[in-house]
Length: 104
Image (cartoon, rainbow, N blue to C red; front, top):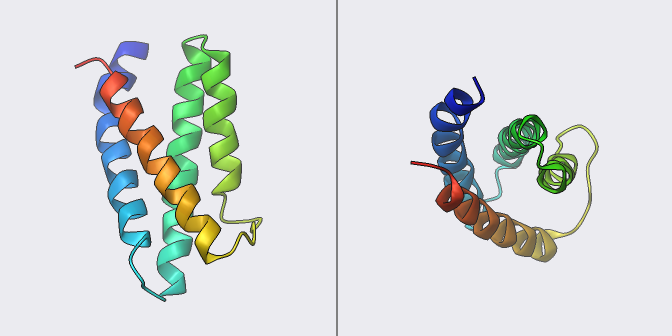
């Protein structure tokens, strides 16, 4: 069961998160997009945290869980535009590394 979940969902999910985070780097001012982005990235990171927990990788569970908390749409973290850009870039880098580490 664990194998199916890893091969079916994470690659497309991670790709969607990467694209959405990349779009967020553009100078758009549509607030609704950022809320949608937070729902997608928070949910995706929570899913990756659950996978890490099921696989016994506790350090990755805490990492993905921390990102899910940071991107949660309920409690806002007012980091400012510049700091959110840096966080988004770092998240994109981590997601690319996670995608490469998945089994083909």
